[in-house]
Image (cartoon, rainbow, N blue to C red):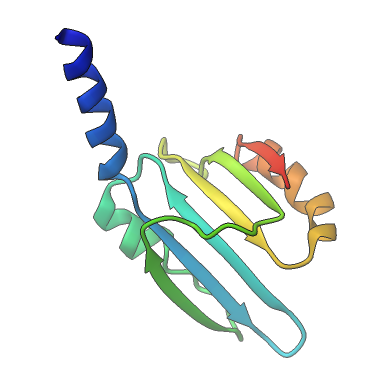
Length: 117
């Protein structure tokens, strides 16, 4: 009985953070699409801070979804922003050759684990 209770708590706690945002930006030359999947960030902070990019000179749209869509060429799992203990998974879409720059940034700056698809 206790095992069922623990399993139920795990399922509930995972659904608490079933939250993601798709960020798309366009400038004159480059179109970027990423999706940030919340792991441990408080919901309001995720919406108002982590999913509100400030990209000078670029038109940016943010769409909130329950989960990141399939089709990413790479994911930085358990990524951390500098100075905060919170984690998120960052899904990258678009040009797969960008992985040569994104993988080192994921592992070194964000202390994440890179997964290529």
